[in-house]
Length: 354
Length: 109
Image 1 (tube, each protein chain N blue to C red):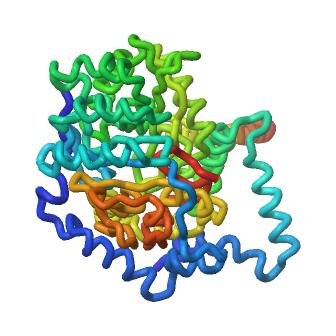
Image 2: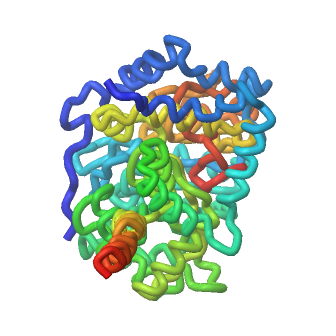
Image 3: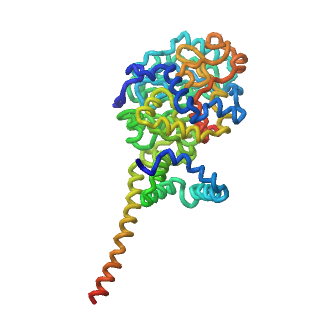
């Protein structure tokens, strides 16, 4: 059994639960007094301002903020107490777009997307559109949390879903510290279930990738060497296989921002992000090829902007009025949190970018 | 009041300001040393952490604790590395006891 770590910022009625307060915090202090350059100033220096979209490749749909876990670093502030869930009506609007979009990847996320009561219907319908890569971001533990989810590996296999799952470390201590007591053991169990149906096995096309994000106020190391360490440890200790590891940087928003402030790490972390700024990562940052759709159908440049309630700077702002040509002709909204995606080798939902 | 300010670590790169050639040569050398080679970058990070402790360098401890975490090194591995450094440091003191013994034996005949 997994045990939730704490409550969401929303449930705790924390000031930082409000996107506007997060934005204010990120714009003041170090960045207001000139100690550090704002993200806009930084990319102006490298002639990359304003940030503009390239060809749309990924449509990322957040089907709800409800989750069976309350992870320490969660940028969604997800948890069992979050009631924001995409309705079938909004899903239908998304399906209309999926059928016509030029994007080759559909990426479902949450919360735990599987907790949306219409999740399976949505997957079945969306799979008919024939997208090249259909991703579901699963937290793994959901598959062993209740018997109604036990058949998820078979369900995913049936629709050739590409599974992307979080795993902050190959040891129990670090994983449970970030994601809650019992999460490591439950994740291992779920990974074995996925391996059993073929997911993640060498030469098997059923894709299983893991996402690593640091379990504290530090940046991720080199993705390739982390992948080597993860593969060795998970295979030797548990006989588990997976395909690729994506190393992600924690962005200073929501619960991770709350953690940075409470642990007195905020200033050092922002310095680290700014010092690690890499213009090459800006060129391929995920907001340039992705659109993010919220549970209620609004459109954002990325999942992080969604959580900060920064809707796209376009006449078209909602999935019901979707127009890809119009949306591609927009400036991407940026702020200091964007330093998280441009540090070092860069960070995106698909791993490093530079 | 302390002579050490954690924020000074951020200014380490400014060493090149007053001697660009030497400073740059040092940082080039430093960067090269920590690249993957016959030893992995992970192994080098643990050596650096152990030496940071024997040298009692707060900046280095700060930097290589963070570097270790970034590389996924566990706290148990880090502590073992610190003990390796501490063992060599104490052994280095203790082995001088042989000098003391030699001197006693010589003086007492």
